[in-house]
Image (cartoon, rainbow, N blue to C red):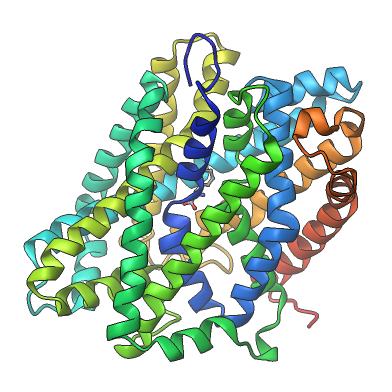
Length: 454
Ligand code: PHE
């Protein structure tokens, strides 16, 4: 995005930046471990279902707000609220998105820092050390984790501070295909070396008893998180979209690429989980342990492929991280007319504090549970991914569906098929808000208060 014109230079730029945002830790770290924690099959099917039925429509709605409202997540909504004679309080949706983005930034940087750290460990070779011991040693060290996430946070801050200019487009052009290829190679490795049959049956068949509100909430949360919905990122990126770019087509491309990477990550990781008899329900450590097991098995080759894998994962995390920071930085700098660099500094400092809390969740505050949530890290993740995202998603749907209905046409969306356009509006008006709020309520009752109805 060019600071002067506030617009991407071409149509490819939005696709690359939005795909760079969507494809990140959520796909390669988050999806497999959440699938494992939630028992596999049902979660995966629900995730795919929600990506199509709610993810794509709400993704489009968020980009639509940015593209037609032109502005940061708060001012874009305010502009549209004025135009549609709606209450200015709709801007709360923008504020809630920014809040979610800051919380996510706080824990995202920590996992990304761990990825960078693992890159170096993989380069040195794992030798005979047991992956579980390596992981336990890494996360036990508060200062070491702080060191790694700080590097990541500062690097993201520098890029965001200068403005996500053409650099991101150039980098994504090369790195995204590389990441894609590498993930597919890892699937190949899993097929040859691991237990692909068990992985497939685990990921794509389900048992009825897994069906509960928590699993459903986790699946929607993961779908939204992975698509970068609900944090203002898509509004910001949408506002830089050239006027003639077709919003519908662009959204389908990004959503498809993102979902494919998540599925491939699952197919790369679970064959190894079963082959090495690792615990699929291990949680956030799953990817680190399975991948290191594979890399150490590969010997010298692993010392080459391992760092490459972590490097690409770090790059994917990096492009997502800058997109997480973008909404709050543009908001601050526009609202308080401060230079971008200054706004970035404030945002990074705030995220730094949140990241410290989230690191502590791995070690010094590991046993401090917050309500039903195990530690501060888990609590931050829950608050952002499962709690806030669904609410912001509801707000976006209702605002676009009910308040902006008159402005929705083929010109603004690039969708010429009237039936599809109507379907989109119906989903935004009814299907999405009703199902999101129901899932949100039941999921929270179950996870936070242990009250379940089925
Ligand atoms: N979608 C990114 C991922 O899957 C994370 C992200 C969320 C990025 C929200 C931007 C906004 O890793």
